[in-house]
Length: 290
Ligand code: GPP
Ligand code: MG
Image 1 (spheres, rainbow, N blue to C red):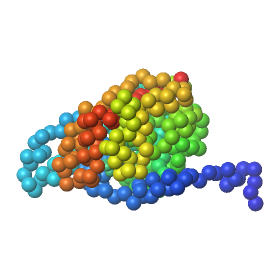
Image 2 (cartoon, rainbow, N blue to C red):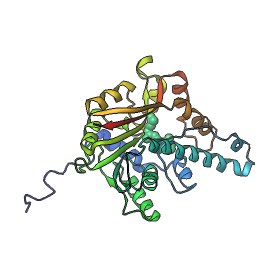
Image 3 (cartoon, helix red, strand yellow):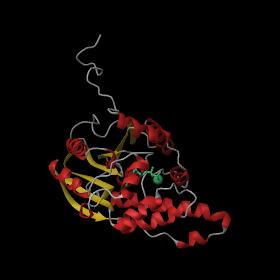
Image 4 (cartoon, rainbow, N blue to C red):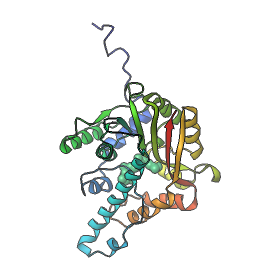
């Protein structure tokens, strides 16, 4: 019989709509070499893109080594991206603090945050396969007591109010409503804590979704937001930006190298077109919770 303490009475399902179920299904099935082979380079599995110049020597490597040299270089640029994201927490996060990774994928950025800050990290994902993969990685790395992955919806995590010192989203906000997301993050982050986001957003200045941006949406089943929506939703929910960095120029070399690699997926040309024509930006926003 259900009692007053029963957790079964008001538990909402993690997946709340046909849309969310289709996104979860995509990530449950996903085993793309562009993510798996890069992760195998050093055991950090990322689900985001890269930044910085690539070493052109990888393209000249001997035939038998060229493919792997390019893969290792793409992986280095993706790790560099996560490092830049974490740089923007500055000294806000201290050892023992709690952080949350909103849309944690196979766990790459979460492990880097734990290693860098000594923080306890909770990653959330609506993909059960990703949660299982990332928790397996945490066990293999011997950090399962500090880095945990949960099958949870980042719009409504159930974590305690004010329990997080830092939250980040690394290319995941295009799957959700930003007002709902930042409402939940404002609840979770204690005042003085920080939120850091890297995202792709379309350019309000040049109009609505370009063809290339629509192709990216279609490829990932996402809904890329305009740049303006981020600042409105952050301000509406008590977040004050401290840094905004346009990473567009820094990510183009990654896409150029990826287009020449054996692990290209076909989405490289829309990204290059969207960035070069100025209809789309790769943006970092760091904002403090007031
Ligand atoms: C990165 O994941 C991509 C997304 C989470 C969605 C879209 C992001 C935008 C900035 C628009 P991934 O590493 O799994 O992608 P891929 O398989 O293409 O490498
Ligand atoms: Mg990838």
